[in-house]
Image 1 (tube, rainbow, N blue to C red):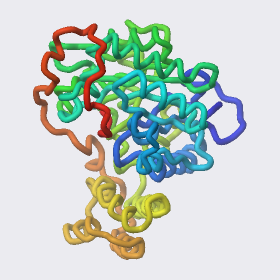
Image 2: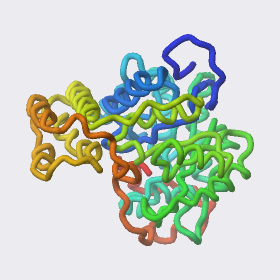
Image 3: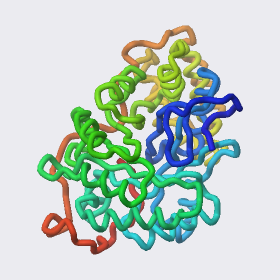
Length: 390
C-alpha cells in the first residue's frame, strides 16, 4: 500500500507498518478542519504543485463509542474520497472494550487502512473526566487500550499508531512511558505533540522531548508535532531531534499547499512559488465547492467562513470585504466576494507563522484522586464523549 498516485518506484521516506510513504509527513486530525473536503484539497494541491501525493492525511477524530453505535454524524465524519489512499482514521477512546469493538468494526467493514489513537486532547471537559492527555498517566489502562486496538486488527494490514503529549504538566511527564508501552503493545509508530496538557497550544513546543522520546523508543518510528509552520521548520525538527517524521496541525490552516512545499523539501526539489492572492482565491473557491459537496450549501458555507480568515491572514483585503466573507451564505455570493480581491498581490511574509487557537497555559483539571495510582486501570466514567483532538 502506498500514498502515491502513480506507479513509479520510490524509496519510502517513512514506513508505518505496511504503509510506505514517499514523504515523512502526516496531517494531524483537527476537529472541524480535516474532513474529506480539506483532505481532498491538500492532496489536489500536493499533486498539482509537487507532482505526487506523498504523505498521510488523517481524517477528523471520532469517538470509538460513537462509531460502534453508528452515530450518523460520526459515520459522516468517516467519509473518504473515492481515490483516497491510504485512508487514515483517528479514534478518541478511553476504554479497552469500546476500542476493540471500534477497531474490529473498522477492520471488518473496511472503513480505513490505518488507525491512529489520540491521547493528546488538553480540553478541560475531557481531562476532568480522565480522557485525552490525562489518560496516559494511567499506564496500565493506556497499555490495555493500545493492546485492544492491535488485537482487533490482527491478521490485517491495518497498522495502529498512537499520539500523545509530553504529559499533564511539568511535574507529570508521561511521554517516555507512553512511547514504550505503545511500542510494546504493538503500535506501529508513536507521535509526540511536544507540549504538556497544561500548555494547551500556548508557548513553544519543546523539541528536546521529541529527541528524548526518539532515544527512548527505538523499535518503531517516532514522529514529532509542534510549531511546524513551513518546510524549514519540518527539516529543522528532524535535524534537531532525529525523529522519523513530522505531524502538521495548525501550520496548514489557510495553507493547504504546505504539503506540496514539504514534499519538495523532503525530496530535494524546488518548491512551487507561494500562491498570489488570486491563486489563494481560487483555492478558497475550490475548498468551498468541496465543502458544499460534503455538507450541502448551508453548512458548507458556514464552515468556509473560518477558513477564509486563515487564508487571508497577512493579505490586504479590507475590513468590509472580510466582514462580508465572514457572513457568506451561498457559493455564488462567495464567487462575487472573491472577485473583489486583487489577484496580483504576491504572498506576503506576514502570512507566515502560527495561526489558529493558542490560548494560555492553565492548571489541568483532573478527576479527584487521579494522580494517586498510575497503575489503576479503572475506566474513567463519562469520558467517552466526542471532543476535539490535541
